[in-house]
Length: 296
View (cartoon, rainbow, N blue to C red):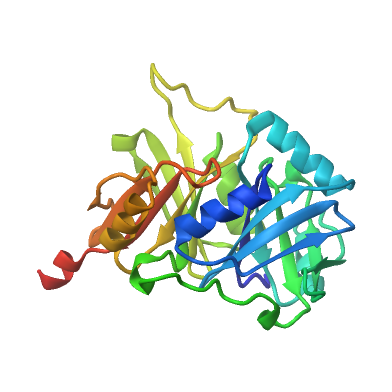
């Protein structure tokens, strides 16, 4: 199926100005652009990274999408809202998904306007959340040139910034359904499916365009029960890549951000640090290479 990438990750926020300032602090980069979707009743701020972009999005008017965002914010507050899967062939993807049994729309035209008057155009393929594990997930084909989404500029030391997204975490009550949908129906490569009793979970890693969708089915214990079998899957957290985790951690600490000490990552040869604020309610991890491992 013609999927090429995780095009962007959507984060719902109430206060776009405050969220934009927080993500400039968090990523160490200036916002790429700000704009709005008059037909949707929303406004947004985009941080274009190497392999995807982060879209902070907020309701600002009337429209079905604005209504959906307000409901999400009232229920859950700021946080991860959805994922857009990137395609270069929206019509072909829609046909493939429809043939596979998804209630996918034909490509729907969309447009956004930046403050300087630049208009960005795209085509979306929407799927009801009931078809995709209860998640907000759709596909997008950009019609406008990529130059309309400039890369977020680093402030200070490039190595201390977030330059890419490493993975997005999804919690699910049913790993088999996740494998069937994401792997078989949608055609996203399942790189690893393993039982991890040390963490009380089944962990599935789907790879697309250099980003991992880490899908977790937690078994639960006396303190934390498993998700109800009929519960929708939920977006949970995100990990950003930094070339120098220690420098990124120090940059954030100097800016007054609540960030953990650097520690060894679960993946051999990596370092990680946990960010505890300035992330709009998204549990956030910094991950990057361990220089010591390269020397060993």
